[in-house]
Length: 432
Image (tube, rainbow, N blue to C red; front, side):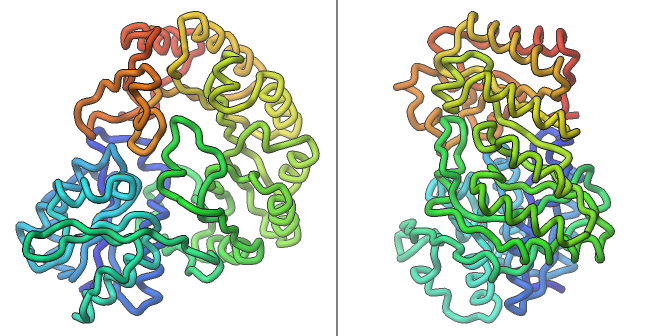
C-alpha cells in the first residue's frame, strides 16, 4: 500500500524522446513526500503507453489516498483521462494535477478536468504539504498552500494561491529515481543543479511563465554528493545536467567543474547552454572536468532571425562549435522552424548554415516551432502575425507545422523541413 501514487501522463504518440530519462520532477516530488513520512509509488506511462488496466490494478493494489499526475501540453489529454478514471473507480481518492501545462493554465486545467486540485509551479513543497494533510485527514486549509488551485464554497468557485520559489535547493532531498525502472530508459541520467527562472525570455519558451523569480543554485558539494550516490547505488558514471542553461552563471560553473575534478568520480557529463554563455577558457575547464557533450540552441541560420530570437550571430556559433570540437566535446546544434519573420529566403539561409555546422562535425536537430501556452508566440499570436494551427491541446507538438506566418504557409514549412532532412540525412527521432 502507498499513501501517494505519482503518475507521468504519456504522449498520445509513443515517443522515444519521452523514454530517454525518468521523470525527474516526479522523482523529486516523490523524495520530498518520502522525507515527510509518506509512502510513495509511481508509474511512467510513457514507457508502456496509457494502460487503463494497469492503472486500475495499481489503484486496487496500492490503495493510495492521493494521486498526483504530471502533465505537459502534449500529455494533458491523457492526464485528464487518468484523472477521470481514478475518480470514476475510486471517488474518495484525491487527484492533484501539476506540471508545465497546469502550471501555466491552472484554473482552466481544474475547470476542464476531474481533478480535485491543481498545483501551479514547483510541487516539492506544495504537493507534499497537501498530500500530508490529506493522508493524515487534517483540514486542508487550501488558502495556506502556495500554488494550490481549488474549488471553494457552494458554487464551487475556483480560487488559487500564488506559487512561491523553492528557496535553497540544498535543503531538498535528492530525486528518488528508484520510483521508476531506470534500466528501461535509454539515455543519460538527468541531474538538475539549480531551480528557478531562466534569465532569458525567448518567444518559444514557457520556462519564464512557470519558474517565476530568481534562480537558486545547488552548492557544488551537494551536486557531487548526488553524483556519488548515483555511482554507488546505480553504477551511473555518465549524466546530463538538465538545467535550461547550465553555464548561465560563469563563476558557479567554474566552481562546479573544479568540484568535479577534485571528486575523482570519473563522471562524464553533458549539458545544454547558449553560444554566448561559453568562452574558450570555460570550455577548456568543462572538458577537463569530464564534459563530453554540449547542446547549443541556435534556432535559426538567418542573421536577422538569430538576433531577434536569441541575440546571437553566426560567428558566435562558429567559435563555440569549433572550440568544443577541438576539445573532443560532441556538439548538438538545435534549430526550430519557423519564426514569425521567417521567409523563404531566411529558410534558405538557415539550411545553408545547418549544412555548414554539420560539416564541422556538429550533430543537427531541427523541430517545428510550437507555440506552447505561456510563450510569447502563443500569447501574442495576433500581434506577431501568426496563425496557430492546432485546435486542441493534444495536437500541440514539434512533429508537424504548428503555426503559419505572414510569409509562410504550412506546406512551405513542411517542404523546407523535408528537403533539409533529406539533404542532410536527418532522421525523425521524436516518435516511433
